[in-house]
Image (tube, rainbow, N blue to C red; front, side, top):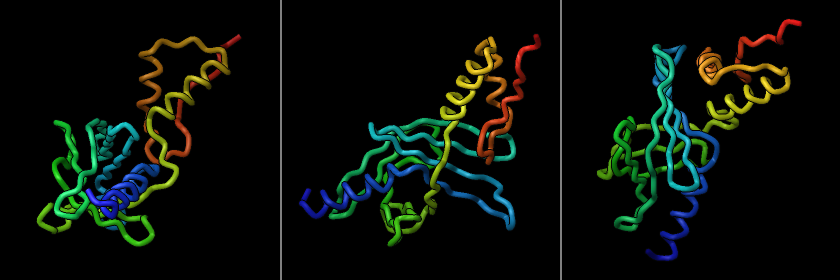
Length: 165
């Protein structure tokens, strides 16, 4: 790699590690499906698909490579929606990233989403709430409470109430 491609790889890496990247399949005015990608520092990528049946989580791996003077995103994982080798085309502001096949056509366009909260954030908040209220719940009950639609909510709906005295 040259210093120029090293710099491009570093810049794209920093870009991908910001919050979350969302691709929405729209049928105006609503989204039929949303795909959220979260790139982690150690090379893990989390994928969450929201559709009419709920949400579906998958984990895979990602890395950036240099090929023919271009930066290529490599996504691997058995159940990832998009996997393989993709060229990356960020917009000037860094708010949109287009994944293209290595031949050049755009495959999918992702929009940067600030402040995205993953389910692990909701789980941590729920555990703190349980401890604060002095509740004693089983892991199954906690998982059941987390599955109550938190999509699009700014905080999870726990359905918990303080213990009766």
